[in-house]
Amino acid sequence: MSKRVQQFDNFTWIDLENPTEDEIKSTSFPFKIDQNFIEDALELGHLPKIERTTEYLFIILRAYTATESDKVVGVQQISNKVAFFITDKTLITIHRPSFKFIETTPDNFKSPLEVALHLFNELLMTYDEPIQNQTDRMAEFEQDIFLKGGVGLSVEKLYFEKSKARLTKKILLITQNVFDKLKVDDNLSS
Picture (cartoon, rainbow, N blue to C red):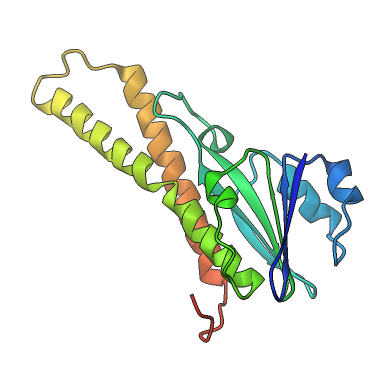
């Protein structure tokens, strides 16, 4: 496990990379984390979600991590998740792989929610290039089918591209539902 603690003027950000359940339990947090949320944070294929408790806001989001050549058929093959625990004074992030957008986060934020919103945006940006690539490849498949009569068309490649597109759409639709449930103070500066 890699643990990074970043102290801001008014709050603390604790980032845990690739922790085990025992390592999370042995880490000292300023509030008690529900066991079910720890399990959700560590489950490989967990889809995006949002939960509120009296002490914190718990959010799971997924960053796109598949490469262009990956043959994917499941959520955990196309993306990796980041779990967020957010209070007024603390942000805790838990994730398996390292993410450049987490490592390079600026340190000029005034609240844990501001950092989280920044990370949400950066996480969503991981989908930009893959979506454009998927669109381009689907256009190539359409040209092969409609203009070249399907000569040289690989049904296997078409299947895996369609699978990537379907999974990407699914993750982003569920993520939109999470964001729809997220209430942000209108006075929050960005």
